[in-house]
Length: 190
Image (cartoon, rainbow, N blue to C red; front, side):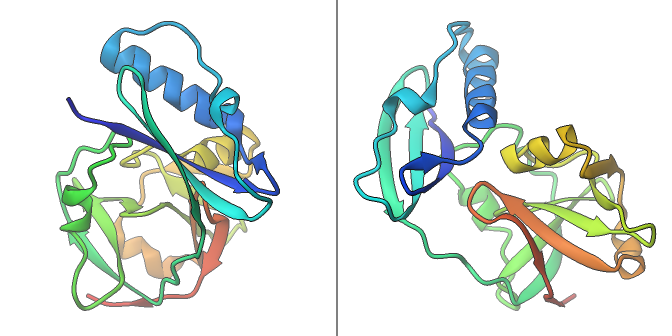
């Protein structure tokens, strides 16, 4: 049976954005396994110290493992573009298909699916438009927890984004459970 994953940012023994992790975790279990019982991930999270951790909760029908890994951010310096029909609606533990998309000429990729920008392999993506609004793809590969929270708060807006529009934006940001929302200045490779 395949395993799924929730990655939760922990700092000073506090889980960031836990309500969105719970929502995705419970929705995934219901959609894939028919489990309707609500479960609170906070009830099983006990980080060992006050450091910053990447908490990995591996599960399918049941919780399989919980690990606390000291967190060191990955610096994104170069991004290339890759076309793919990858399906990543759920956050799977096995990332082989995503990892295979990484181009040796860059350290991250923007995935283009059906001629539209979706995500990178590690994060959702957003662009600052000329009206100073942050726009994120309407059809991401994965509905990330930070992305969902920022849409709910009105900070992010969704719409379809084509690759040739990137030069029209003022800034680019990545967002995931670990980095939160981070503006980056990568070099684009083609």
